[in-house]
Length: 346
Image (cartoon, rainbow, N blue to C red; front, side, top):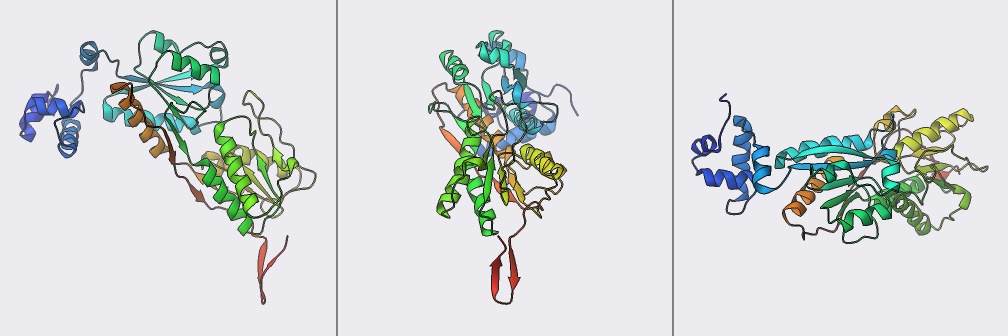
Protein backbone atom coordinates (compact mmCIF):
# COMPACT_ATOMS: atom_id res chain seq x y z
CA UNK A 1 0.00 0.00 0.00
CA UNK A 2 1.28 3.47 -0.94
CA UNK A 3 2.47 5.66 1.92
CA UNK A 4 1.27 9.27 2.25
CA UNK A 5 -1.95 8.79 0.31
CA UNK A 6 -3.25 12.12 -1.00
CA UNK A 7 -6.68 13.44 -1.91
CA UNK A 8 -5.59 13.33 -5.56
CA UNK A 9 -4.95 9.57 -5.20
CA UNK A 10 -8.47 9.08 -3.85
CA UNK A 11 -9.97 11.34 -6.53
CA UNK A 12 -8.21 9.42 -9.33
CA UNK A 13 -9.33 6.10 -7.88
CA UNK A 14 -12.99 7.04 -7.60
CA UNK A 15 -13.20 9.29 -10.67
CA UNK A 16 -14.01 12.66 -9.11
CA UNK A 17 -12.12 15.90 -8.51
CA UNK A 18 -9.83 16.59 -5.54
CA UNK A 19 -12.25 19.36 -4.52
CA UNK A 20 -15.08 16.83 -4.27
CA UNK A 21 -12.89 14.54 -2.14
CA UNK A 22 -11.97 17.46 0.12
CA UNK A 23 -15.62 18.43 0.57
CA UNK A 24 -16.61 14.85 1.36
CA UNK A 25 -13.84 14.26 3.89
CA UNK A 26 -14.59 17.57 5.61
CA UNK A 27 -18.39 17.08 5.59
CA UNK A 28 -18.94 20.15 3.43
CA UNK A 29 -22.04 20.81 1.35
CA UNK A 30 -22.15 20.10 -2.38
CA UNK A 31 -21.61 16.33 -2.20
CA UNK A 32 -24.38 13.77 -1.76
CA UNK A 33 -24.40 11.71 1.42
CA UNK A 34 -24.01 8.54 -0.63
CA UNK A 35 -20.89 9.84 -2.41
CA UNK A 36 -19.48 11.24 0.85
CA UNK A 37 -19.67 7.82 2.45
CA UNK A 38 -18.17 6.16 -0.62
CA UNK A 39 -15.21 8.55 -0.56
CA UNK A 40 -14.71 8.14 3.19
CA UNK A 41 -14.77 4.35 2.88
CA UNK A 42 -12.22 4.44 0.06
CA UNK A 43 -10.01 6.87 1.99
CA UNK A 44 -9.96 4.51 4.95
CA UNK A 45 -9.29 1.52 2.71
CA UNK A 46 -6.35 3.31 1.06
CA UNK A 47 -4.90 4.35 4.43
CA UNK A 48 -5.49 8.08 4.04
CA UNK A 49 -4.82 10.14 7.16
CA UNK A 50 -5.72 13.75 7.74
CA UNK A 51 -2.92 16.16 8.53
CA UNK A 52 -4.71 17.45 11.60
CA UNK A 53 -1.87 19.83 12.51
CA UNK A 54 -2.11 21.61 9.15
CA UNK A 55 -5.93 21.60 9.32
CA UNK A 56 -5.96 23.03 12.83
CA UNK A 57 -3.58 25.84 11.83
CA UNK A 58 -5.71 26.64 8.79
CA UNK A 59 -9.17 26.33 10.34
CA UNK A 60 -8.51 27.17 14.00
CA UNK A 61 -9.68 23.79 15.32
CA UNK A 62 -7.73 21.44 17.54
CA UNK A 63 -9.65 18.38 16.31
CA UNK A 64 -9.88 17.16 19.90
CA UNK A 65 -12.92 16.72 22.12
CA UNK A 66 -12.60 16.70 25.90
CA UNK A 67 -14.52 13.88 27.55
CA UNK A 68 -15.02 14.99 31.15
CA UNK A 69 -15.97 12.43 33.79
CA UNK A 70 -16.40 13.38 37.47
CA UNK A 71 -13.83 11.47 39.49
CA UNK A 72 -16.50 10.01 41.79
CA UNK A 73 -17.89 7.95 38.90
CA UNK A 74 -14.57 6.26 38.15
CA UNK A 75 -13.50 3.93 40.96
CA UNK A 76 -11.28 0.87 40.90
CA UNK A 77 -14.28 -1.35 40.22
CA UNK A 78 -16.42 0.97 38.07
CA UNK A 79 -16.13 0.50 34.31
CA UNK A 80 -19.53 1.71 33.04
CA UNK A 81 -18.41 5.20 32.02
CA UNK A 82 -15.13 3.92 30.62
CA UNK A 83 -17.20 1.87 28.16
CA UNK A 84 -18.88 5.10 27.11
CA UNK A 85 -15.45 6.68 26.64
CA UNK A 86 -14.29 3.81 24.43
CA UNK A 87 -17.31 4.12 22.17
CA UNK A 88 -17.01 7.91 22.00
CA UNK A 89 -13.35 7.86 20.97
CA UNK A 90 -14.02 5.22 18.34
CA UNK A 91 -16.89 7.23 16.84
CA UNK A 92 -14.93 10.48 16.91
CA UNK A 93 -12.51 8.90 14.45
CA UNK A 94 -15.23 9.00 11.81
CA UNK A 95 -15.05 12.80 12.07
CA UNK A 96 -11.22 12.81 12.21
CA UNK A 97 -11.38 13.89 15.83
CA UNK A 98 -9.66 12.53 18.92
CA UNK A 99 -11.03 12.19 22.43
CA UNK A 100 -9.06 13.41 25.44
CA UNK A 101 -10.18 11.93 28.75
CA UNK A 102 -10.28 14.45 31.58
CA UNK A 103 -11.10 13.46 35.16
CA UNK A 104 -12.95 16.21 37.03
CA UNK A 105 -11.76 16.07 40.61
CA UNK A 106 -14.04 16.92 43.50
CA UNK A 107 -11.75 19.84 44.34
CA UNK A 108 -11.81 21.31 40.83
CA UNK A 109 -15.58 20.93 40.64
CA UNK A 110 -16.04 22.62 44.00
CA UNK A 111 -13.57 25.43 43.22
CA UNK A 112 -15.01 25.90 39.72
CA UNK A 113 -11.75 25.18 37.90
CA UNK A 114 -12.18 24.43 34.22
CA UNK A 115 -10.07 21.56 32.80
CA UNK A 116 -6.50 22.51 31.88
CA UNK A 117 -7.04 21.27 28.33
CA UNK A 118 -9.56 24.11 27.89
CA UNK A 119 -7.16 26.84 28.99
CA UNK A 120 -4.45 25.37 26.75
CA UNK A 121 -6.84 25.43 23.75
CA UNK A 122 -6.39 21.70 23.23
CA UNK A 123 -10.10 20.94 22.67
CA UNK A 124 -12.94 22.34 20.57
CA UNK A 125 -15.69 21.24 22.95
CA UNK A 126 -16.68 18.93 25.78
CA UNK A 127 -18.82 15.87 26.26
CA UNK A 128 -19.69 15.84 29.97
CA UNK A 129 -20.25 12.26 31.04
CA UNK A 130 -22.01 12.00 34.41
CA UNK A 131 -23.82 14.49 36.65
CA UNK A 132 -21.96 17.65 37.64
CA UNK A 133 -22.98 20.46 39.97
CA UNK A 134 -25.27 23.31 38.93
CA UNK A 135 -22.49 25.81 39.68
CA UNK A 136 -20.08 24.01 37.36
CA UNK A 137 -22.70 23.91 34.61
CA UNK A 138 -23.11 27.69 35.01
CA UNK A 139 -19.34 28.06 34.63
CA UNK A 140 -19.30 26.10 31.38
CA UNK A 141 -22.26 28.11 30.08
CA UNK A 142 -20.73 31.47 30.96
CA UNK A 143 -17.58 30.60 29.02
CA UNK A 144 -19.56 29.69 25.90
CA UNK A 145 -17.93 26.27 25.57
CA UNK A 146 -19.59 23.90 23.06
CA UNK A 147 -20.83 21.04 25.21
CA UNK A 148 -23.14 18.07 25.35
CA UNK A 149 -24.37 16.26 28.47
CA UNK A 150 -24.31 12.49 28.35
CA UNK A 151 -26.24 10.25 30.78
CA UNK A 152 -27.75 13.17 32.72
CA UNK A 153 -29.66 16.42 32.33
CA UNK A 154 -30.59 19.43 34.45
CA UNK A 155 -33.06 22.31 34.42
CA UNK A 156 -30.74 24.05 31.92
CA UNK A 157 -33.12 23.21 29.08
CA UNK A 158 -30.94 25.00 26.53
CA UNK A 159 -28.12 22.45 26.98
CA UNK A 160 -28.28 19.40 24.74
CA UNK A 161 -28.48 16.09 26.62
CA UNK A 162 -28.52 12.43 25.68
CA UNK A 163 -29.93 10.04 28.26
CA UNK A 164 -31.31 6.55 28.43
CA UNK A 165 -35.06 6.41 28.99
CA UNK A 166 -34.66 5.83 32.73
CA UNK A 167 -38.27 6.55 33.63
CA UNK A 168 -39.92 4.17 31.19
CA UNK A 169 -37.34 1.41 31.64
CA UNK A 170 -37.84 1.19 35.41
CA UNK A 171 -41.58 1.64 35.00
CA UNK A 172 -41.54 -1.50 32.81
CA UNK A 173 -39.17 -3.30 35.16
CA UNK A 174 -41.45 -2.64 38.15
CA UNK A 175 -44.48 -3.70 36.10
CA UNK A 176 -42.69 -6.98 35.43
CA UNK A 177 -42.18 -7.55 39.17
CA UNK A 178 -45.83 -6.78 39.90
CA UNK A 179 -46.97 -9.13 37.14
CA UNK A 180 -44.78 -11.76 38.83
CA UNK A 181 -46.87 -11.38 41.99
CA UNK A 182 -44.77 -8.87 43.95
CA UNK A 183 -46.56 -6.18 45.95
CA UNK A 184 -43.98 -5.16 48.58
CA UNK A 185 -41.31 -3.62 46.37
CA UNK A 186 -38.49 -1.38 47.60
CA UNK A 187 -36.37 1.11 45.65
CA UNK A 188 -32.62 1.33 46.30
CA UNK A 189 -30.94 4.62 45.37
CA UNK A 190 -30.31 8.13 46.67
CA UNK A 191 -33.09 10.01 44.89
CA UNK A 192 -31.33 13.35 45.55
CA UNK A 193 -28.10 12.24 43.89
CA UNK A 194 -28.57 12.35 40.08
CA UNK A 195 -31.25 13.03 37.51
CA UNK A 196 -30.97 9.42 36.33
CA UNK A 197 -31.73 7.98 39.76
CA UNK A 198 -34.63 10.42 40.19
CA UNK A 199 -36.16 9.38 36.88
CA UNK A 200 -35.73 5.69 37.72
CA UNK A 201 -37.45 6.26 41.05
CA UNK A 202 -40.32 8.08 39.35
CA UNK A 203 -40.76 5.19 36.91
CA UNK A 204 -40.91 2.81 39.87
CA UNK A 205 -43.40 5.07 41.68
CA UNK A 206 -45.66 5.42 38.62
CA UNK A 207 -45.91 1.64 38.39
CA UNK A 208 -46.91 1.44 42.07
CA UNK A 209 -49.53 4.15 41.58
CA UNK A 210 -51.06 2.46 38.56
CA UNK A 211 -51.35 -0.81 40.46
CA UNK A 212 -52.68 0.96 43.58
CA UNK A 213 -49.73 -0.15 45.71
CA UNK A 214 -48.63 1.99 48.66
CA UNK A 215 -45.23 3.69 48.59
CA UNK A 216 -43.64 2.98 51.98
CA UNK A 217 -41.01 5.41 53.27
CA UNK A 218 -38.81 2.65 54.68
CA UNK A 219 -38.87 1.02 51.23
CA UNK A 220 -36.86 3.94 49.79
CA UNK A 221 -33.29 2.94 50.64
CA UNK A 222 -30.34 5.29 50.09
CA UNK A 223 -27.26 3.74 48.51
CA UNK A 224 -24.76 6.62 48.56
CA UNK A 225 -23.84 9.80 50.44
CA UNK A 226 -23.93 13.38 49.14
CA UNK A 227 -20.47 12.93 47.54
CA UNK A 228 -21.65 9.90 45.60
CA UNK A 229 -19.72 7.35 47.68
CA UNK A 230 -21.55 4.09 48.39
CA UNK A 231 -22.75 3.55 51.95
CA UNK A 232 -23.89 0.48 53.86
CA UNK A 233 -27.42 -0.43 52.84
CA UNK A 234 -30.16 -0.43 55.49
CA UNK A 235 -32.50 -3.40 55.06
CA UNK A 236 -36.11 -2.72 56.23
CA UNK A 237 -37.29 -4.71 59.25
CA UNK A 238 -40.19 -5.98 57.17
CA UNK A 239 -38.41 -7.56 54.22
CA UNK A 240 -39.83 -6.60 50.78
CA UNK A 241 -40.45 -9.39 48.31
CA UNK A 242 -38.47 -7.45 45.68
CA UNK A 243 -35.91 -4.66 45.36
CA UNK A 244 -35.53 -2.31 42.39
CA UNK A 245 -31.92 -1.07 42.41
CA UNK A 246 -30.83 2.03 40.50
CA UNK A 247 -27.76 0.27 39.05
CA UNK A 248 -26.20 -3.18 38.83
CA UNK A 249 -23.35 -2.46 41.21
CA UNK A 250 -25.82 -1.50 43.94
CA UNK A 251 -27.86 -4.62 43.17
CA UNK A 252 -24.66 -6.68 43.45
CA UNK A 253 -23.89 -5.06 46.83
CA UNK A 254 -27.46 -5.64 48.01
CA UNK A 255 -27.42 -9.34 47.12
CA UNK A 256 -24.16 -9.80 49.02
CA UNK A 257 -25.65 -7.95 52.00
CA UNK A 258 -28.83 -10.06 51.95
CA UNK A 259 -26.92 -13.32 51.62
CA UNK A 260 -24.76 -12.27 54.55
CA UNK A 261 -27.96 -11.93 56.57
CA UNK A 262 -29.08 -15.39 55.52
CA UNK A 263 -31.60 -14.14 52.96
CA UNK A 264 -31.62 -16.10 49.71
CA UNK A 265 -32.08 -14.44 46.31
CA UNK A 266 -34.45 -15.02 44.56
CA UNK A 267 -36.02 -17.65 46.85
CA UNK A 268 -36.69 -15.20 49.71
CA UNK A 269 -36.76 -11.97 47.71
CA UNK A 270 -36.07 -10.80 44.17
CA UNK A 271 -33.56 -8.15 43.05
CA UNK A 272 -33.33 -6.23 39.77
CA UNK A 273 -30.70 -3.75 38.57
CA UNK A 274 -29.98 -1.28 35.78
CA UNK A 275 -27.18 -0.88 33.17
CA UNK A 276 -26.40 -4.52 32.26
CA UNK A 277 -22.75 -3.97 33.13
CA UNK A 278 -20.20 -6.45 34.47
CA UNK A 279 -21.93 -6.66 37.88
CA UNK A 280 -25.05 -8.11 36.30
CA UNK A 281 -23.16 -11.32 35.46
CA UNK A 282 -20.75 -11.30 38.40
CA UNK A 283 -23.76 -11.39 40.67
CA UNK A 284 -24.95 -14.75 41.98
CA UNK A 285 -27.67 -15.16 40.84
CA UNK A 286 -27.17 -13.27 37.58
CA UNK A 287 -29.26 -10.09 37.52
CA UNK A 288 -32.41 -9.24 35.67
CA UNK A 289 -31.62 -5.70 34.58
CA UNK A 290 -32.02 -2.99 31.93
CA UNK A 291 -29.49 -2.90 29.11
CA UNK A 292 -28.40 0.65 28.29
CA UNK A 293 -27.67 1.26 24.61
CA UNK A 294 -24.24 2.78 25.22
CA UNK A 295 -23.24 2.61 21.56
CA UNK A 296 -26.28 4.58 20.35
CA UNK A 297 -25.97 7.17 23.14
CA UNK A 298 -22.28 7.71 22.34
CA UNK A 299 -23.05 7.97 18.62
CA UNK A 300 -25.67 10.68 19.21
CA UNK A 301 -23.39 12.58 21.62
CA UNK A 302 -20.56 12.67 19.08
CA UNK A 303 -22.89 13.80 16.29
CA UNK A 304 -24.25 16.59 18.49
CA UNK A 305 -20.89 17.95 19.68
CA UNK A 306 -19.44 18.00 16.16
CA UNK A 307 -22.57 19.81 14.95
CA UNK A 308 -22.27 22.39 17.73
CA UNK A 309 -18.59 23.01 16.99
CA UNK A 310 -19.43 23.76 13.37
CA UNK A 311 -22.39 25.92 14.38
CA UNK A 312 -22.31 27.28 17.93
CA UNK A 313 -26.01 28.19 17.72
CA UNK A 314 -27.04 24.64 16.82
CA UNK A 315 -29.49 23.13 19.31
CA UNK A 316 -30.68 19.54 19.54
CA UNK A 317 -32.56 19.44 22.85
CA UNK A 318 -32.92 16.39 25.06
CA UNK A 319 -32.82 12.96 23.44
CA UNK A 320 -34.00 9.73 25.08
CA UNK A 321 -32.47 6.43 23.98
CA UNK A 322 -34.51 3.34 24.76
CA UNK A 323 -33.13 0.49 26.86
CA UNK A 324 -34.41 -3.07 27.12
CA UNK A 325 -35.01 -5.53 29.94
CA UNK A 326 -32.62 -8.48 30.11
CA UNK A 327 -34.20 -11.38 31.99
CA UNK A 328 -31.92 -13.55 34.10
CA UNK A 329 -32.19 -15.47 37.39
CA UNK A 330 -32.71 -12.89 40.16
CA UNK A 331 -36.51 -12.71 40.00
CA UNK A 332 -38.88 -15.32 41.38
CA UNK A 333 -42.51 -15.48 40.35
CA UNK A 334 -44.81 -15.56 43.37
CA UNK A 335 -47.45 -17.35 41.36
CA UNK A 336 -47.70 -21.11 41.00
CA UNK A 337 -49.90 -23.08 38.73
CA UNK A 338 -52.67 -25.22 40.18
CA UNK A 339 -55.66 -26.92 38.72
CA UNK A 340 -57.88 -23.91 39.24
CA UNK A 341 -55.44 -21.41 37.67
CA UNK A 342 -52.86 -19.00 39.04
CA UNK A 343 -52.77 -18.54 42.82
CA UNK A 344 -50.57 -15.97 44.56
CA UNK A 345 -48.20 -17.11 47.33
CA UNK A 346 -47.65 -13.57 48.62
